[in-house]
Image (cartoon, rainbow, N blue to C red; front, side, top):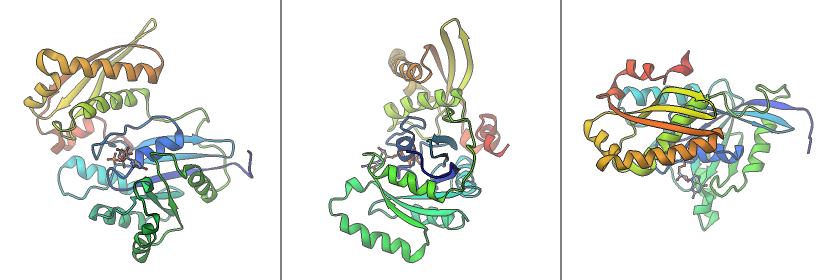
Length: 301
Ligand SMILES: Nc1nc2c(ncn2[C@@H]2O[C@H](COP(=O)(O)OP(=O)(O)OP(=O)(O)O)[C@@H](O)[C@H]2O)c(=O)[nH]1
């Protein structure tokens, strides 16, 4: 139903790792864009996802979680991205998990408070809580220390109360033209999503054995006739990790390739010939130059 003037604006979703940011955005878009896995810290890139309706357009900035530990150059880079994405947006959604408050949440809340945007506290995973009354003192405690322009309870996973949240976000937007073409879902290139689909397969299969620092780069992407030929490199830090990914007689990498190819085919709606290589680049997570070379810095360009 068409209501009032067309509205458009930017939203950023901020919260500690694993709180459900990607799940929430995917639910709003009803399309799988950023990867969701059980391993914390899977969202590395700032994903710009666009939700267009007849009433307005909402541009999502997905942020990496706020990381608490000091750690590597990569972690610092993720923190900077999270902090910068609370600026220059109309609405910040601060996502917390029902009945769970950690030091990382506290840190994320402090970042959110610095923003001049409208701030909405979104309590996610309420499906996990039997006695919903417990949520009142939980939220009151947060409100003792931090100010918000609204509070919202959702289950991103079960798609509960997502539509009303979308309406609330639109309410905070000014009237305005669409920011992007309405049929555009993300300004991230297809190439980026392809590498994320490969990473997702790696994380699903090896989330015990592999560190977060595994990354995937596309070496080449060529369309010949009806077939898309994709060559990708999986970068790891250590030789033994390379062994794990390849598996006995190449069995593991073969399966990763089969699964990733199926997902990529669904995503680009075309036949795919996928070739994967595994290469070792020692301790690249501590080398800021390597991070830049792999393209993690492109949001600062
Ligand atoms: N029960 C329940 N689980 C949820 C809900 N929302 C997300 N999850 C689960 O929580 C886990 C983390 O979700 P993600 O969406 O990847 O979290 P994220 O905040 O994007 O995580 P990072 O990428 O690590 O920053 C996944 O296993 C989700 O299925 C929810 O509403 N209820």
